[in-house]
Length: 163
Image (tube, rainbow, N blue to C red; front, side, top):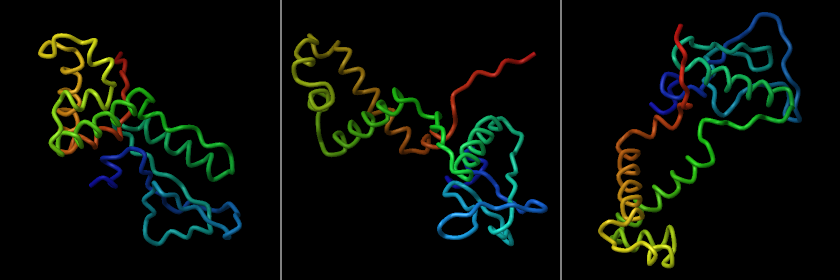
């Protein structure tokens, strides 16, 4: 499921294009990426095309195709912006909190590991501490990811403006 182009918009469907130029590398002529679905019968020594599904994730598919085009042409590949640095930090904290909780750590112990004892001591009283609420949210968020919400990580957050 996680490799389905319907779930992960960065997966592109690669098909044979008419005519052709392929790119040369030290390994010969080819184009097969690690985030592509290559249709059976495709000859990677010929030019290929990318099928972009025009669904709600089309902008993500276009971004992924743009990154692949850069890689194919030996250019610097733009960063994948689906996960911002702030979101990446929160994901790391979620996993650390979930790992601690699954190994029997208390919320207080998790706060100390994530934010330090000095910061925890500054949050008094413990029952109304914002850090306590943060860690409870991190554990809950990690649980949701583990239960299948991780597929939403493949999607870029955006607001679409309708006419």
